[in-house]
Length: 158
Image (cartoon, rainbow, N blue to C red; front, side):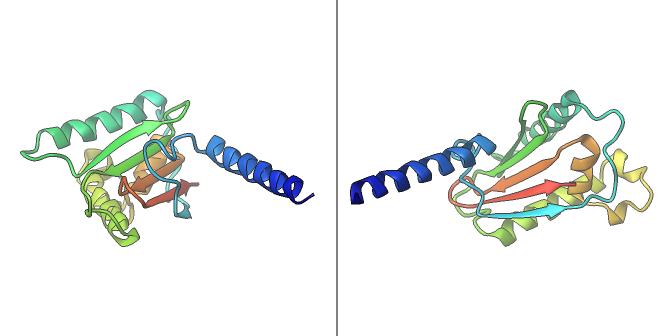
């Protein structure tokens, strides 16, 4: 009887972990299972020209900018999901983004970069917008930032 209970528990845990992986096929491959989550309500709506192509182009542009610098990138950024609606940012250094605070500092740095773009400069009150607002405008629904080792933070964008 005890072995049957153990097998039932093992089966339930296996099914639960499989369901968790099914909902996030990128966890365990690009980053560890998210250790924290939040929901961000954007200050703007998705733009009318937002598309899979624009989201992928956005990540290609950021990666090209990083490659032009005289040093290796400190993070990699890419779009995943059926419609490239999931933005993934993974740190490359062993201790660069190893706390939630450092991940949020990276997001603040990306906000500064976003505010320097012509897109944001033409918005009313660009100083009140942040990187997640830009993500919403382009059509991303989720951003996951990770140190690429043990920490991942998920942000659902509404």
